[in-house]
Image (cartoon, rainbow, N blue to C red; front, top):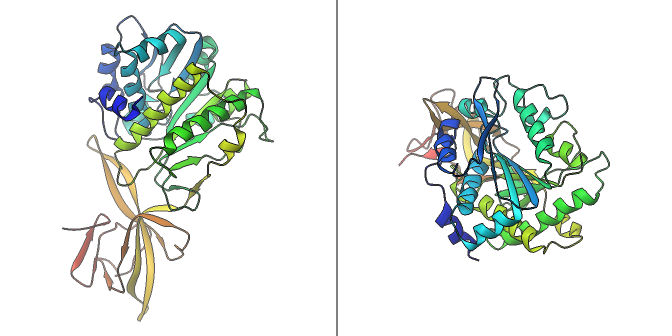
Length: 384
């Protein structure tokens, strides 16, 4: 099967970019509501509907939810790409629909999606509310879990551009985690199933983006939903859609999340998951905070009357302005960058730094500056 072509043939073209709201996906949900698969299972803090979409008649039940964090939309796009596969009438679609029942909450946190925030409208991180269930969105997620009684849970997220694959210098484009179910991080039957499935997805993705797959930290936190569901005995997999070079809109990463989803269902359907792939799972390098969006090396500055050479880094902040996400670069670190990588690296070779302030890079200052009075940087990039 050509997974890249499958993606291209089924990509949901009405949604793209990072800012995905309920208004973005409601027309799609209504279009694919061909047999009353769609229902409203609750409301957000601000009264927006939380939709559930159930499709398939198979024995194996898969529970998927996305945009638990409102500003993490990549997996939502990939989820709709996959739902298009289920509606394309192919032999693959018929096979999956006959063997699986998919229960999807494509946007758990519609208020956060509108506000482009991680938290919900009450400024609560829903992924730390799995025990107290203080928020209406958390209660919906748990109620659907208890009613659906899934065989596998897919917890779909994005991660920031700061994460790399260990110290390899490669960004973590896709990362996985089989959450722990206890403080000792032991492996029981439930967690083993998640581990085996991740190992299988990793093997597939290595063919497309070798070295760009990471493994998330598995420290136990019962307040996290993945840890809770694993504790309750349901194999749970955390997906983290990360950075691919220059893919800040996450349209390329979207494809690899789609490939991971489809390959996981194929493996489950064909029952090709090995009994114990713990070593393969543990050999996936861990995520590590080692990246900045920009690193500038060998910059000459005048500091207290003395010229010196320094390095500094800038990082994008994703800021919602008039319904659009603006990537605005701010200086994030000065000096001590030896262990960090940049998605973009510029070697100034001793050029003199100037800006409109004190001619010295300062934290949280916009990354607008000049080198040797002729090379202008605006929003982190060379102005052409």
